[in-house]
Image 1 (cartoon, rainbow, N blue to C red):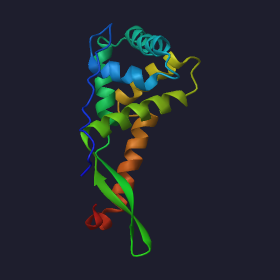
Image 2: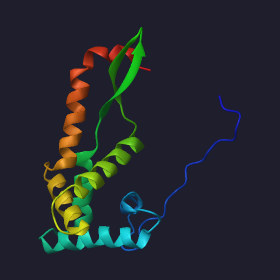
Image 3: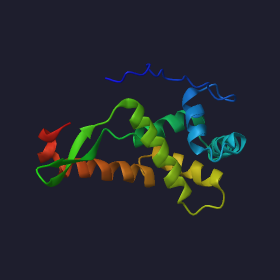
Length: 156
C-alpha cells in the first residue's frame, strides 16, 4: 500500500457544442501540444462532414463507432520460469475507452484523405459500420487473446 494520499479522479467538463462528456474526452485525445481549439475544429468539422454525408445524428454515429472499437480482452506479457507468455486479460472500462479513442485517432491519421477532418469522419463512419482500421485493430487484439487462451491460468 502506498503511504501517499489517495489520488482522486478528475472529472472532465463536457464539450461546449454538444454538451457530451465522451466528445470532450475525445477532443483531449486528438489535441496535440495543448492546442485545444485546433482539436475542437477537427472533431467538430468531422461531425459536420458526417451530417453532410447523410448521418442524422453525428453523436450517435460516434458512440456506435466507439462501441464497435472498444476491446474486451488484451494480452500482457508475463515471465514465468524463464519464458515469456502472452496472457489474455480482461480490460477495465476506462482503459477500453482510452484504447478505442487512441485507435480511432491513429487509424484516422493513417488514412489517405486530404484533411484530418475528412479522415476522422470517414473513419468514424467506417467504424460505426463495423469496418475500418480501428475495428481491424480490435479484431487483431481479440485474435491474439484467443490464440493465447491456454496461458490464461497465469493471470496476475
